[in-house]
Amino acid sequence: MSDGIQRQYASRIEGMTSFKVVDFLEAAVKMEAQGRDIVRMEAGEPAFPTAPAIIEAASAALRDEKTFYTPSFGIIELREAIAGFYQTRYGLNIPAERVVVTTGSSAALGLICDLIINPGDGLQLTDPGYPCNANFVRRAGGEPQLIPVDADNAYQLTPEAVAAYWQDNTVGVLVASPSNPTGEMLSRDNQRGINDVVASHNGVLIMDELYHGLVYDQQESSILEINNDAMVINSFSKYFGMTGWRLGWMVVPEDALEPINIMAQNFYISPPSIAQYAALGAFEPATIEIMEARRAEFRQRRDYLVPALRELGFSIPNMPAGAFYIYAGIEKLAADSEAFCWDMLERAEVAFTPGTDFGEHLARQHVRFSYTQPMDRLELAVERLSKALAS
Ligand SMILES: Cc1ncc(COP(=O)(O)O)c(C=O)c1O
Image (cartoon, rainbow, N blue to C red):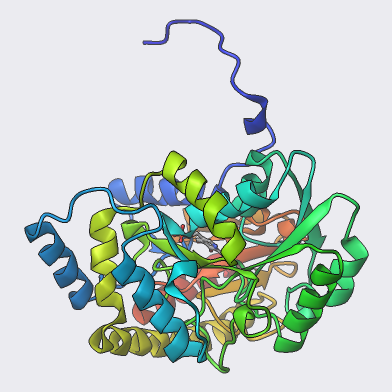
């Protein structure tokens, strides 16, 4: 029972926005509990089970009682395995000492923002973009500097935009490629161009490479190929499908290691031990084979869904290059994405997310579909949407 006292909580919360996808997720779960069948296309997590080698590594860790704190930067075997992954994936020689294992990439985003942002500093972000980024900036006392991006530029920043929006208080840029919510990528030329603009201001370039490995028609390149001192965020959540294990990592320049270590020790002590030992199974050839088969499956789903949604009246100017998202315009179908998503959840029993979760720029005219469900469910979603839109 409430004690009736009116408490004054910290003002930093006031500017923070809720994560709307969770509102839809909770509504969908409630409807399912009432016995309704909802096609779930709102959340950004693969519906595949954890790969057997990862489960086996976790079971062995439990049997061997690897249940204690680890070093703050993670167990050295895992840091070495991640460094090895940069060698095999990108031909890059990254010392394991520069790899910092974190509690999901969310913790890495928080640590980097706390590292580079003084109160009043600005960090450039895309609009639309991953919604939590702006709140990490706010938590550090900074100002999210949102740059509107459009389909013409693959919903990504350009060097020109970064230069034009750079302000006296700007300290850096955070870009995700492929991006959430659009699945679109930053071209190598634009990576290089943005890197040059940021360097000319002595700023920090943070690249979120979380959806690497989920790219369908091209070979992705890491920003570390261009700038060895860029800050890179990555995670076991998406390509390796380990969302609930809460494990991510970052690659940072050497001079950032000590301050990050101080924060990590104080704020989290260490990432979860069992998840770290489990993740050693992620780099085994058998697991990579499974993940590559899943990549092919995601590609098939994208290739089915994009034309099917276009047929229903959604506008999708470009074929998204990666991730498992489709950012679709609804201008021919409805005036307001939030009302539209609630309506479709109720009438079509399909859950997807309004653009307003990802920023302000044309957010009421867009929605995000996540194709993490199997093909037969996606077909059912299209059938249901088709009926609901016709009535
Ligand atoms: C672009 C992007 N960055 C970071 C995250 C955080 O993921 P996690 O903390 O699971 O690694 C997400 C999650 O959806 C994301 O889409």
